[in-house]
View 1 (cartoon, chains in turn blue, red):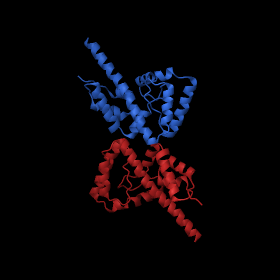
View 2: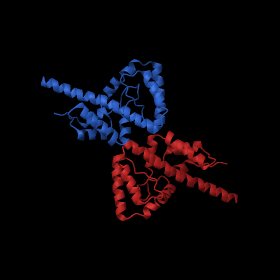
View 3: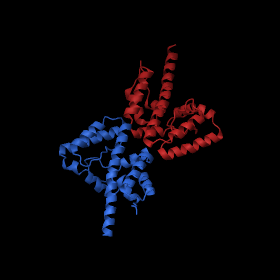
View 4: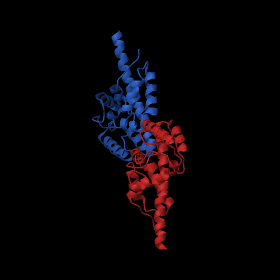
Amino acid sequence: MGSAFDEKDYLACCGSTKFAKEMVSAGPFSSYDHLVNAARDIWFNKVDVNGWLEAFAGHPQIGQSPSSSNKTPISAQWSKGEQSTALATATDSSLQELSDWNTQYWQKFGFVFLICASGRTTSEILAELKKRYLNRPIIEFEIAAKEQMKVTELRLFKLFSNVTTAASANNA
Amino acid sequence: MGSAFDEKDYLACCGSTKFAKEMVSAGPFSSYDHLVNAARDIWFNKVDVNGWLEAFAGHPQIGQSPSSSNKTPISAQWSKGEQSTALATATDSSLQELSDWNTQYWQKFGFVFLICASGRTTSEILAELKKRYLNRPIIEFEIAAKEQMKVTELRLFKLFSNVTTAASANNA
């Protein structure tokens, strides 16, 4: 038996339409390894640069609450969970500084600052933002795509675990 | 004395609005070297990935006549000149093959196949297209940006030469 998900499931993990469609075609998957290898291949080798930008546009600004930028309610909920350490360690002034740097980042690169925030404090995120701000646009574009893939992998794991947990419960 | 050009002049060389605006701010330029160094810095370090895509969208498909894709009449005329070797060496069947591969390339990468065509035959261009088609999208994106810069440099040279020729004629 393999796990089959639909386009909406995959869009909650990564907001590129091409990614979601190609994942549906590549499935069903017999294991999480099988699933994640297909996802990496599709994201890095098949999704074009417009698809990367489409996925980036699905993320809220770090430090802000997920809203219309998220394509699905489940991705809004996941986004909140991924930022829980950052939010717990934030002060008003650090959130303001983060917001100012996010604006500057956007002005330079034309897309939102993307980082796999799980387990990172606000000051760690801010330090990373300031460092990455110095990059050339094409370099930063690829770094952002790698961070997107880390976020995608965490979400695919949740998706896969939910299904296998449900399947075990049904078989119990 | 330096050479000052306006946004429209720079847009004819490279169809990114940001590139054109930054070039106007960086000028006037005392020499072609000064001009081209500024252009390289702006294109590779300041224009973001959206600006690269905007510039790529200003090119006709290789083997097709420049039309609405060119932002200015002068860039349409230059584009025709740059493709003159390709057009002189083309046959009906090679143009058809080029058109088919251009379509495939577009489907994979989401932007037009960009090559500095000056002095290249149709079969050389086709061979290059087939080779580059195998690249990952992000790799191909950067190669296309480098080809765009080669085209831009040739056009900046024409722009600069026209002005200095006119200036010499006036001083004669």
